[in-house]
Amino acid sequence: MKLRGVRHRFRGTGWVLDGVDLRIEPGRPVVVTGGNGSGKSTLLRVVAGVLRPTGGTVGGRPGVTGYLPTPFPDSRLSTRRLTEHLDAVHGLRRGAALDVLDRLGFDADPDRPVADLSAGTRTKVGLAQAVAVREGLVVLDEPWTALDDEAAAALDVVLAEEPARTLVVADHSGRATTLPGALTYRLADGALTRSRPCRPGGTRIELSCRGPAAAVAAALPSAAVGCCEGERLVVTVDVPGADRWLAAALAAGCSVIDVTRLPERSA
Image 1 (cartoon, rainbow, N blue to C red):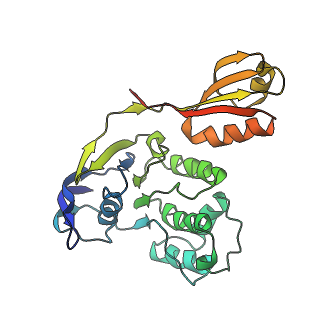
Image 2: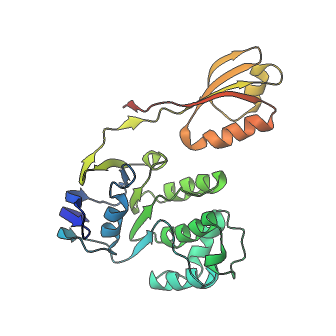
Image 3: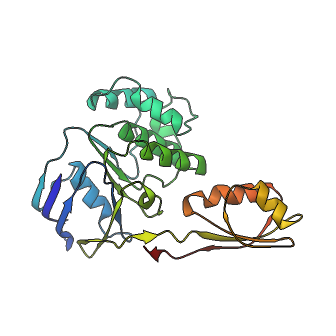
């Protein structure tokens, strides 16, 4: 799939997209980053085919597209009816999206209207109907937003299980950049540029432990230990797993002294 010279603006505004060129291939997830209002959602709408650009061309879009907008719209249909309807639209077997939804930890009543669900649970519904598309194009706008830690980790696994899918993701969390084969781009001032590959900087966590730090560290999930003296423990963990690691440390009786997000480093 290719975008060539894509431009778009809304009435009364400047160019949100100004000459965007992009090649999208199976097995090479495209990750779009950028500040709020930079046009990421507009670009994803063009990629998904729900918005016709003002100028330029879009070619080679797969016949089936699973699309998660943000926020996922309300519906008076139940989760079951909505996902089964979208399964049919996408040419999938009945219940395919519900299977993905179960993996994301959906625990609400599937016969309850989607409009009555919490924001995080609606996001799970939107994700499930989009990610269930395995042979086609999947476009996800901030998919980790509003997810709890367990659902976010489950989504990491679900996306990594299909390395050959054609995937475009707008993401500010940093999780999408860890997908196998990911190509990262930055959108700013209407222009899309390739970002230099970076190694995630991780999260530095400093704790005061209840007991010898070495014993506590051995009982906690794996992490890079920077200091382990007396009851003081300093570790660095990957960004996607930081919340879960910290929760485990607190459950073990540790007190938090400091949490710092470390900058990315050039690869």
